[in-house]
Amino acid sequence: MAITVTGANPTRVTVVSNTVTADTTFNGSATNDRNYAIGDDIIGVVNAGVMVGGFGLRLETIAVNGDIAMTNNGGIAVTHATTGVALAGNGGSVTYGGTGFITNHSNVFNDSNGNGAGGNVLFADLNNGLAVTNADFLVV
Image (cartoon, rainbow, N blue to C red; front, side, top):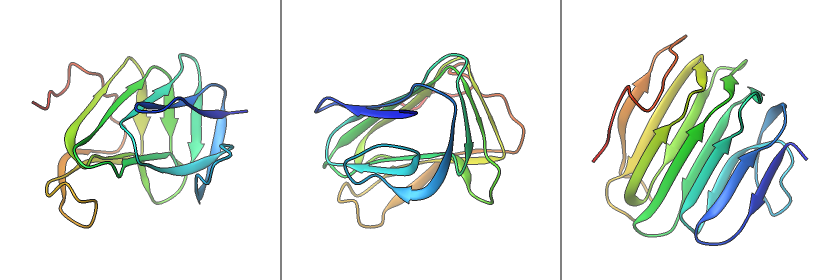
């Protein structure tokens, strides 16, 4: 299985092998979905040496004050007109780090009103072709 979803609060979404994601939403059996809207804090991981293609990844916590911590130690190379990585917090913290890279265009959001309905605030707009690591920005 290319993407696994394990644990609870935090729920861990891990890309364990090369995958091409479809523009679909996780419904309980992870395969190659792009969208993961989960009612827990989320830890997202792209393992070292692993590539994500297709539509990239979108992690959203629907828990009030939910946190997302994303570590990319592989690569995300989007081949569609969508963001490579989208992280939608719900009033909690959103962090991105790792030694991996993203190509195409990626946005990082935080839900400013904490209710999951609107209020998404763009706090990072990662332009095409950037290699982003945790040293590039810090959100406090």
